Length: 139
Image (cartoon, rainbow, N blue to C red; front, side, top):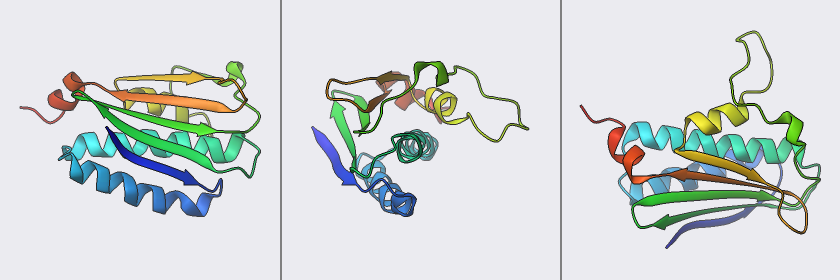
């Protein structure tokens, strides 16, 4: 079931609009606060990366779906595509000014993948599985 489907201009001042929509999705599915924080952070990072690195004015497509007990979010831009050498698994040192987006997306979700879809651009797929959704916040 689709919970959210948006086409957002690739401009930074639309971040709050996206955050508001993501918070509404979290409320609709009664997401725990710590899961909601991770959810908004991961999708927000994917959106910010798309704005900065896609080098296009085409809108960014965001979709959130519920499949069984899992939540799946996709963020797709239609820009130049990701340079695979930029993908890092670990957070950079605290003194670094850049490079936190992809590691944060990984840490804030159950799984994350970055793909180069046919037709160009970049597709980020984020998943929150039932186990993660239930474990966070439990005593």
